[in-house]
Image 1 (tube, rainbow, N blue to C red):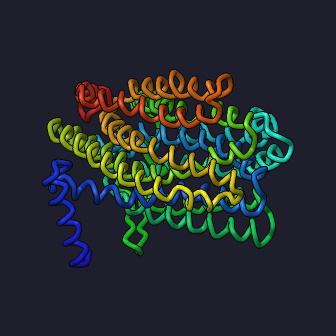
Image 2: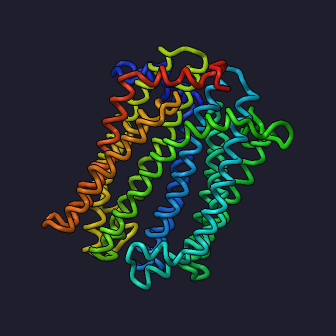
Amino acid sequence: MAGWQAAAVALLAETLERLGIIDSERFRPTVDLAWPRIITGFAIMSKQTADLAMVGIAVGTAGTAGLAFALAFWEIVTMLGLGLAGGTVSLVSQNYGGEQTDRATLVVKQSILLTVALAIPIAAIFVLFADSLIGLFGAGPESLAHGRTYLVLVAPAVLFELLNLIASRTYTGVGDTFTEMVARAGGAVLNIALSAVLIFGFGLGVAGAAIGTSVSTGFVTLVLAWGMTGRSYGILGMEPSPVPVTLSGSWLEPALLWQVVEISAPEIGRRLAQGIVVFPLLWIAATFGPVVVTALEVGRRVRSLINSVNWGLSLASSSLVGQHLGANDEDEAGAYGAAIIRLSAVCYTGLAILVVVFAEPIASLFVSGSEELALAATFVAVGAISSIAFGIDGAATGALLGAGDTRLPFVASLVGRYVFALPAAALGLVTPLGVGGLYLALLLETAIPGGINYWLFRRGRWKAVSRRYRPGSGDG
């Protein structure tokens, strides 16, 4: 790090400490883990956001609406992978922190077996039932055709995406977020470049976006697989995994497999609850026409870009809390969790203000007509405001996840999205609230889970839960 960069980081750390947000000695390890993950998250989220913008330019609202419908199913894949990977990072970080490297490796092997078992049937469903799946939204014929095309062509990437997430969380669990950042960022650049060539150069439209996603996701899988098997990269500062996966040795330990399932299942449920709620929201938006579908998707995609910060801070929270729990230092684990929650709230508030101020120029990257622009800009602003609670939710849930406490966050996700957000959106169909119901839904789907999970962290029950999963607990 250059001298001026080190000085800037030191000044920022001192300022945050004086403001009572996070101590300097905790800020540096948090940032070291978080910043590569933030870039990684931005790279991942930017791919679909860029695809949406390019399809909007090349095809129009019928194309963006069809892409929005197909991306809802791709989001299910991502959420499923994030849930399974959540169990992986919890057990890897605790075992690695407790110097049980062989057991951490075995955790990764269990996760890979589960990934393959899940990915193959999902990919088959995408190919065989694409028309029926996109038809669930009541899409028009043009949007239906575009959505079907994307879903079929992206199906081969399902396995790649799930394996990528397991590898990413493994690196995070051992405190290395740089290696996956380089791999993911390279994949994002390849995705955007390839999609642009295929969409504009070859006129493939939505098909070009799908092919770009599949090829780039496969590329990232190959890059990460190289290091996950213990091979040295030799360049760019990337490191082989310290918990390497090889064909030799045991691949199945029922007790450990059960721990992965036990921790991952509620986290998968929480993530799926977050992803599945998009389906009725898009169906409601579709009743107002493809312009509203596009505007909602633009708002959600911009919020996803803001939420890239969570990719870093949430995973830093999981890793640092998990490692200190693995070392039986509960007080330090709690201090890290609380500090990262405060830091996340500050970061998200600043980003939300910035996006609200520039909501219209941001929306203009996706739509052009005056009516479409005004509507999309409103969704962008509402999505930005709702992201503040997303930040608190992510950091608090990250700390709970690091302890292996995943059941109550799952319930919080259900309550926020299905007891509050969906009914609010549905009000727009039967009252003069109209599209305003979707605005309210975006706010409630983050505010309710964020508030509940913050309360769960403050309650402290997660420390007791973690004792069941630490090295030497008797379960392994």
